[in-house]
Image (cartoon, rainbow, N blue to C red; front, side, top):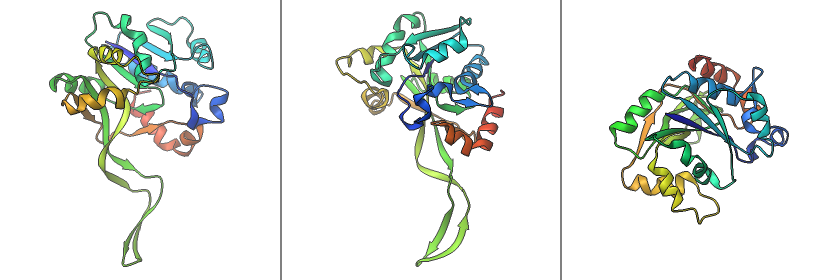
Length: 239
C-alpha cells in the first residue's frame, strides 16, 4: 500500500510563519512535522512507498531539500486544485493498488492504520475517515444554574455531539475516477465534492481513535501552547 501526504496549501492559518517555510516544515524538537509523519508511516510494514504532494516550485522545495533522494519517498508537484484535484496526479502511481492512505501533513496522531484498514475493508467502504468523539478543551468551563456558577471545570474532556473528522483517510482507488468526473471544477474539495455523495450511499466508514490524542498542528504557536500534548502524541507514535 502507498501513503500520500498532502503538504500543499497556502498555510493561511500559520501566517506569518508560513511566509518563510511551508507548514510541513514546522519544527518540533528540531525536526519538521512532516518527518514525524513519514517516520510513523514507515513503521507500518505494509506501507511500501510515501508520496508527498506539495508546491516544490515554491516553499515546498524545502521539503525536497530536507529528504534529498531518499528511498521509497516520491515528490509530486501540486496543482492548487483542491484536496481532491491534487490526487489526480497520483493515478499512475496507484497501479496495482486497491486502496491508499491519505494523510494531511498538519495532523499528528498515533492512528492505528492497520485497524483503520480493517474497518475500511469490513464495511466495504470507498473511504474510511479517522474520527473522534472526545476532545480536551483549551479553556475552562463552568456549570451555571439560574445565572449562578456552581462549579468550575478547568480544561475538561468533552464528549462531542458530532464526530470530529481528522485529516487522515483510507481511500479506495475508485475515488480517483470519481474525482476525474469533477475535473471541470477549478477546485475539487475531497470531502464536499466527492465524499459527501458517497456518505449518502453508505460508502464512507469511520474509525474512532477512542482515547488516542490528536492535534491539528496549524502553526508553531499551537504546537508551543500544546507542548505536553504534542510530546504525548509523539511518544504514542513511538518516535
